[in-house]
Image (cartoon, rainbow, N blue to C red; front, side, top):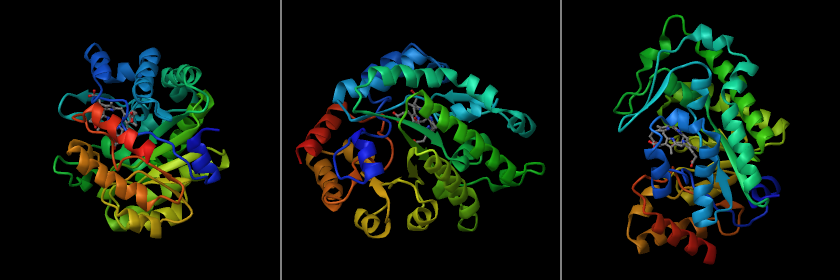
Length: 334
Ligand code: CP3
C-alpha cells in the first residue's frame, strides 16, 4: 500500500509528498514536449507522452505520488463538445448540445478516453510499487462552468446561462455524475489508486445553490468511491467557512484546503477527514526564508495528525523548480 493510501485509508500519520500541477509549465522538460505539441487535447490523448510527462516530476524530485497528466476538460471532450485551449486565454468550449450529451453511453465515452486509460496503465507499470498513481476528475459544477461558459472574465457569473430555456440543469448534473463515476472506475481499473475531485470554481456558487450544485453532486461521487473502496480527496476551492458544511455532508476520505483557509481553523473544524494541502503556491515565488516560514506553519499545525503536505492550488508556471527542491528537502528533513 502506498503512503498516500496509508494516510487516507488507515489514517496512519506518515509523509507522502506530491503537488498539484506537479507536471506542468514550470518544468523545462514539460515545456520542451509542449512546444512540439501545440494541440493540448492531442497531447493528453498521446498515451506515451502523457505517461512521460506524468513521470517527469517523479524523476526530478522523487515524489511519493504521480498524478496522471490529463485534464478535467477531457470529459466534455469525450461527451462530444468542442474543447480548445487558447494561448494566454485558457480553455474555450463550443456550444453545448444537451440532446447529444444525454445520448452518450458508457461504451462510446470510455472508447474516446481509452488513450488516457492506456497512459495510466503504462505509467503504473513504470512507477515503483510503493508510489501512488492519482487520477482526477472535475466536479460537475466546475465542468459546467466551462461547458456553459458561465464564468465572465472578472470571475462573476453569467447566471443567465444557467436559465437557458430548454436546459434541464438537474438532468445535466445527474448525467455528469454518472459519466464521472464511469471515468473514475475506468481510471482505477487502469491502475490508479486514488482520485482527486476538483471543484475549482465552487467558490462562485451563490449560497442558495451550493447544496444542489456542489455538496450533492460531490456527495454522490464520494458515495460511489466508498462503495467501490476507492480513496478519494475533494477540493471545493474557495468556499471559505462552508468547508465545514461540505465536509460534514460529503464525508470524503481526504479534503484539500485552499490558501484562504486558516490551517488551525481547518484542524479544529474539519473532522473525520484527512486534510491535504493549503500552502499558497505564491509562497514559492517569495524569498526562501519566507517560503519556509509559511510552510512551517502548515507542518507544525498538522504535526500530530494524518496530513498530506501539498498546496492550496496548483503550482504556478513561473515557479522555479529549484525552489520546489528546497521546499521538498525542508519538508523531508523536518
Ligand atoms: O500535474 C497535474 O496536476 C496533472 C495534470 C492536470 C492538468 N490540469 C494539466 C494541465 C490537472 C490535475 C488539471 C486539472 C484542471 N484543469 C483543473 C482543476 C485544477 C485547477 O487548477 O483548478 C482545471 C480548472 C482545469 C482546466 C484547465 N486546463 C485550465 C483553466 C487550463 C489553462 C490554464 C491553466 O490553469 O493552466 C488548462 C490547461 C492545462 N491543464 C495545462 C496543464 C499542464 C497547461 C497547458 C499549457 O498551456 O501548456
